[in-house]
Image (cartoon, rainbow, N blue to C red; front, side):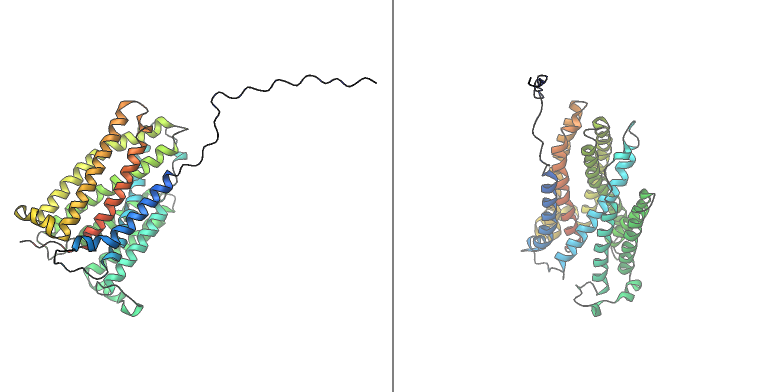
Length: 344
């Protein structure tokens, strides 16, 4: 009986020259998120005591909690405004795969902002004190005071922004978000202040540009990361468009910040108040952080200009810039909670 003959087995395929083991998911986003959460918690908890120490100024009731709520409110504003801003820039890039753009975080941001605004409104309803029970709240009194009406406006505006984010036209959220910015600008400068409308105008410019800058960078980096394989050139183009506008935004932020500072601290008292008041110390911390952000932005911009695909190499310094901007947002919130310096 003859044995069955089988054809010889084909030779084994040579290993792929560039085959590598599957990469583990990057932990960069998780680390960045942890850093932002830590900053959002540390600054409100320890910031007020640190900047008030030795100044002789009294800490207002609930300052840490108010600082935390304002940090959440400002961050929510930045996230949603930045999404609308950069998605409009992306439409100007030929061939951009808009269908595969990063998912929107606008609904989550607006929800968080609404909760924070509701918490701040409860503080106003209890006479600018931290409420401990429902009986402490005078909800009807919110309609009878300027601060109360502005607090209600912010709550309603965030609710409207959340509804817009869930609608077929999510970019329409820019209208209620603009109302939040206007309310914040008016709240920061009460009518009893000298030239209150001028101060509100400066705050309006400062807060609008800051939200576009910080939130826009976050979404631009998310876009660059999302398109890094399918359309890297389009992602780089979006980042380049953002960088051009960011330079103008930074100039406007700097100019409005300097003028606002000089309005609250006359030139002959600036040096003393920067070191002897909580407002001045917080302002110094903010300026130092913004300086770090500016250096990181210049580094990223230089890498972006070196090569057509330079945007892929700017991801590391730009991501660090986002994290430092998170600290700037928290310090800015603290700046709104500490006592305003006295004009000597």
